[in-house]
Image 1 (cartoon, rainbow, N blue to C red):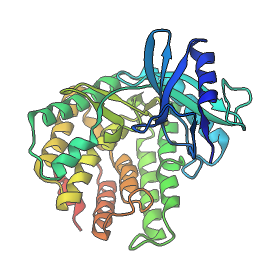
Image 2 (image 1 turned 30 degrees about the vertical axis):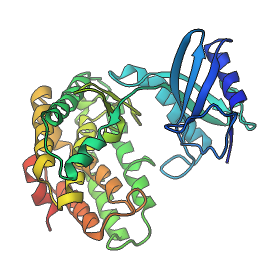
Image 3 (image 1 turned 120 degrees about the vertical axis):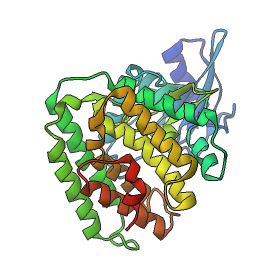
Length: 362
């Protein structure tokens, strides 16, 4: 495992922010220290840096990518993703800004790129609480508050606003659909990450999901007018709320442009997931928020066709939630419910938000 040394970090900060830059603390978020060495640092672990330039004290997050499956096997794979992060973060409203991009050398020096081995991106530090905490509270029996409704509507309207920015590029829209199926982080990367046999999940089941999703790709590939500005990984852990409905977003992924249904399904499947974890179906306050999100988004965006594009994106997110790699502690019953949802949604010509519990039943 590599180590992070204060001397190396401070040398980098002075090269980027000026000769007066002084590193005050650094370390895993919530465990920062002013000590000289951060041992056993693992690529993929965000590190918070607090430093002073002149009289100004500021904080930033140094992010890297862990080697591994899901299309991250080679250094060039990881470099591509991080360079894209740096290039695109600042163009999405409410997204934290990227301050710099650089790399580590073999001897753990941080440089600006020629001798690069592994890349990192330095992003602005933003206060806030992850939105998933709101959903956890409701799943544990918490009362539905006015603020819960306001936040759900704010997120839905935010998506309608960013999706209103369109781009005419048929080849790019088709590429994004192709990547939904074949990208290492998406459907085929996920199905390949499942064990050869896990409980009821067989190769035949996973292949059937892949084949159904590819049929959806052919169904959607002519809808190129739908190419829109997207976040690309719009789930509750990538949203930080402050007071009321004020929020920032983190870690947009994979493509600056894409299908709006990607963002809508990424968020709304989590209302379903947290409700399934508590009750085994969609009900109570989480059902209220699920329906409110869809209603608000469709009214604000006037995109009635988003339900006609949702199926393969729900399948993608469902494969994540049912995965023994990502969610090893889920019950067999939960995984079965998620796969029923995936298969039923893929079989329907259009997703109907009012039929979610029907999709989840056998």
